[in-house]
Structures are given as C-alpha cells and as structure tokens.
Amino acid sequence: MSSNSAPKYLISRKVDTFFSDITAASEFTLRFFKEVFRPPYEFRELIKQCYQVGYKSLFMIALTGFITGIVITKQSRPSLSEFGAESWLPSLSGIAVIRTLAPLVTALICGGKVGSNIGAELGSMKVTEQIDAMEVSAINPYKFLVVTRVLATTIMIPLLVCFAGLVGMLGAYLNVHVFEQTSMTTFFIAAFDKISYLDLVSSLVKSIVYGFTIGMVGCYKGFNASNGTEGVGRAANAAVVLSMFLIFTEEILLVQITNYLR
Image (cartoon, rainbow, N blue to C red; front, side, top):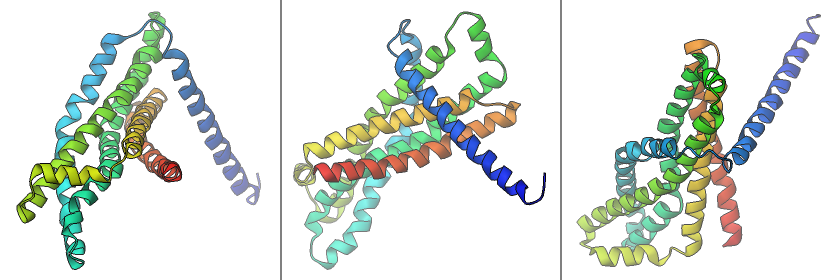
C-alpha cells in the first residue's frame, strides 16, 4: 500500500466502523421493543433494578437538587435587584427548576452514576462469559439483563426528576425566605403561576427519554465489551460520555419542539 493511499484507507475504515456501530446500536435498541412485550416477564429483577436506580440515587439527587435551588436564587438575586424585581425570584426559580434544571441535572447525575454502573456490570459479565453461560442455560440474557435495566431507568428517573424538582424548589424557598421573609404559600403560588401544563408534560417527556437513553447506552456498551478488564473500564467510561452527549442533544431537540408547541 502506497503512502498516499494509507490515509484514505484509514479514513474509510473509520467511516465503516462508525456506520457499523450505528447499525448495531439501532438493532440493539429495536430488539428492546420486541422483547419487552414478550413473556416471560422478569418482575423480580425489574424491582431489584428499580431499587438500584432509584433508592440508591436518592441522596445524591436530593443533595444536588437542593443546592441547585439555592444557587439559582443566589445567582439571580443581584441581577434582579438592579431592576427592583426581587419579587420575580419565585417565578424565575420555578421556571428554571421545573422546565430545565430538574430533568437535566437529574439525568446527568444518573448518567454518571447509573450509566457507569450498568456498563461496568454488564461489561464484566460479558468478558467473564457469564452472558454466554446464560444463553447455554436457556435464559434469554437480553430479556433478563437489558430489558429490566432499561425499564428501571425509564421508570425511576422520572420519579427522581419529580423529587429533584421538589427539593430544588424547597432550596429556592429557603434562600428567598431568609432574605425576603416570604411565606411558603406565597412563594409556591408565585413559583407555579408561570408554569403551564405544557411545562410539566415536557419535563416528564424529557425525563422518560433521558431515562431510556441512559439505560440503553449503558446496556449496549456493557453488552459489547471486550478485551478483559480494560474493556470493562472502556465500556463504563463510554456509557457515561455517550449518554451525556445524547442527553444534551435530546435537550436541544426537545426544547425546540416545546417552544414550537408553546
């Protein structure tokens, strides 16, 4: 092979690999929608995964949501004070937390914690041939391992988003109450005055999409891990990076759709 043709060959090989990965990921995702409605249904494993995703992420989500609520009010107060508009803080906090921050921050936290756990767990099972052993034992590993985890993230992350929104608004209220002595009733009435049903529905749809993305990416990377323990680390890292990239991409698209409907 000549020196001039070598770069072209490498570029062509990378392009082929890129489109092969997209095809494999699409087939992996489509298989989920086929398997999820077919028996047997692994309810016990699903409940276990819901516990792993939801309960074990609760403290981190609560702490992050509370800090987010405080920070948004602290950062907004000086700017609003210049215009004598401190009374807008509750509305601003509600719009920022409910519309964007609760779904996005929760998804990013879970993408780092849950996504890496799923990628590492399934990756270690793959490289130690436990998944192959399940196939030999007449157990559908995709049904048992992938479907349950994707369903768990799709179900639990919207619940975590609701919890993060509640805790975030409580953090915002405490900060406003310290400076303006605003009552809780007055704060929450003003906060939700500018929140419409479209905002609530869009946040719910976002959280469902983010949950599905985190579960699917983690399972795909873990299911296709190779090269021993090094491959497990790469699978966990790739699950976090790719899921966060997709979350931001989906955020842009969903915001555009919401603004169009608004």
